[in-house]
Length: 87
Image 1 (tube, rainbow, N blue to C red):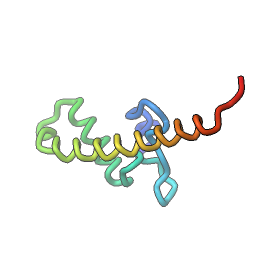
Image 2: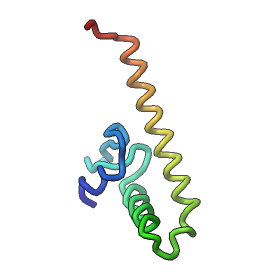
Image 3: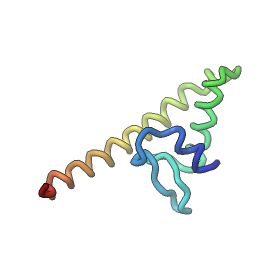
Image 4: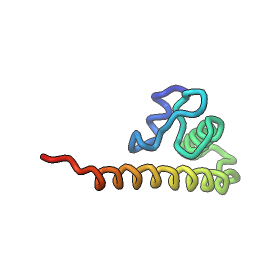
């Protein structure tokens, strides 16, 4: 999986993080789960037969990723509120 392909599936870079081997993955997911979810999204976008049978698994992975992303954004916001910058 290329970095460009991965980044085309995110809105905010905080959705990405390194795994134990330093590869970019969706936060909250493993490398394999990230690759699988990207493949699923692309199959679905192309309307390939069979994508619907994987819909429940994709929802579960997307929910795990979303939860992890929200936790990161929340932690960042809390740090900013605890240490506001002066402008």
